[in-house]
Every structure is written in structure tokens, then in C-alpha cells.
Length: 107
Length: 121
Image 1 (tube, rainbow over the protein chains, first blue to last red):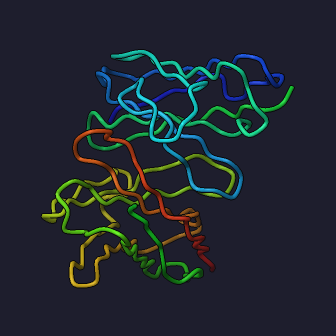
Image 2 (image 1 turned 90 degrees about the horizontal axis):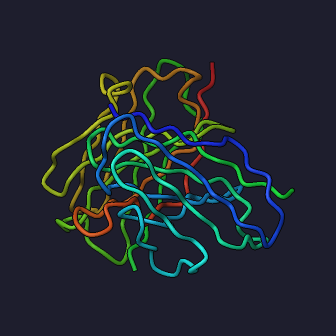
């Protein structure tokens, strides 16, 4: 089973600032990495797939990068609606596995 | 666009069986384009993938749950189901169903709204 590790667990950022979230896989997942955003009381929403491709309707301020074992989600200028929990997930191998999440909170 | 909706009891007694169904709208569960999956989230915690099934009935499970879980498809009702046997309080969670593209994105999208299942003693 591939273990996904996200850091930091919590990220305090001011509106308008840049946020950088990290995700590391215990073995290579190639580019088969997705990012999700989850707000309180809502289901997760797919943001990024293939490590770097934005899903339909996702604003350009969200970008993903990386391949192999190290991945990054960057939010270029945080808007109020971006404060949420973010999860990475690999789909290179069964079983599918998620990272523990990064909570992006208002500083 | 494809929409998913979970249904099932919100309260299950300890040692009994949790049963949930996910119904597909605006699409067909026969589609070879998707795996159909279940994910859960204990209160205040992260996401745990439970398992997935293909349109042809191939199943994939989380090893930590595999001995207690079955997933099946009912093409006549355009839905798929989850059963978790011998539940305990640790199975209390928000349960989501989701589609996963076989090719293309590979991500879990769409998701159902989720349904809370509480295991009582």
C-alpha cells in the first residue's frame, strides 16, 4: 500500500497571499495524483488530476506540480472561499490512498 | 452531468451489517468509463477509501476492510451497493460514493453528498 504524507497539517495564510501544500508518496505514483478541496459540510471536490491538470471549472490560481513521489499544490493568491482542507490522493495503484490533509486557515 | 446519491439507514447497531446504496443519475452504471467507489470519513478525520467496483464487476478493496466489505452493482436499478459486516463504533462515519474515471482524469469525480452512518451499541 502506498502511503501518502501531506505537510504541513495546518497552514495559516492571509488572504491574498500564496499557499504551498506538499504531498509525498512512499513510492512512485508517476503523475497519477489528484488534489481535492473539502469545505465544512461538503463533499470533497476534485481540483487537480494528473498531478498538474485543473479539473473543469477550477480557477487558474490553483496549480499542481510534481511527479514520482513529491507533489505540490499552490494557491497563488488566497481568496476567502479557499480556506478549507486539501487532500492528495494517488490512483497509480490499488488500494487508492489519501493523504491526511492540510487545513488552510485564515491567519 | 453525472450525479450520485447515497441512501441507507443512518443508524446501525453494533455487530450488525451496514448497507448503503448509491444511485446514478444522468448516466449509466454500465459505463466502462468509470469505477464506482465508496469512501468514508469519520467525524473530524480524513478520507479513507473503502473499495471500488468496475462496470464488469471487478472489485478492489482497502486491505484493512476487505474481510468485512462487499460491493456489488445492480444494473437494473442503475446503482451500486456497499455492505460492511460486523460493524463497531469505529465504522461510524460519513460515507460517500464517487465515480472514478478509468481513463482521463483518474480522479474521484463526481461525489455524492454523503450520508452519515452512526453505529450504536
